[in-house]
Image 1 (tube, rainbow, N blue to C red):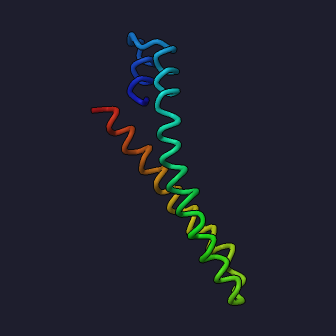
Image 2 (image 1 turned 180 degrees about the vertical axis):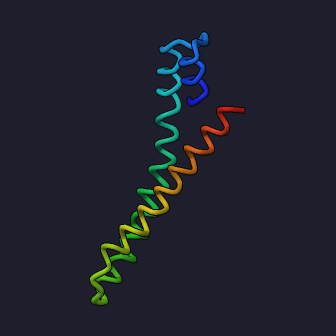
Length: 90
């Protein structure tokens, strides 16, 4: 996607319809992979650990949940964007 959009911005022969079609084709497949990883695996696991901390009397249970879910999620998003951009420039 980055390569298509870069070529389009540089005045290449890539049309807006081509970019939109590629986004429409790739979006659902990539979203499904990420959703199943984070919403079905990481989030419930982080929630269980956070609830266990809270059940043991720690006031940090919600913070533990937030940290265990959001830090890996942000890292995967940043790393994926970085690698995708580097791959597009090859």
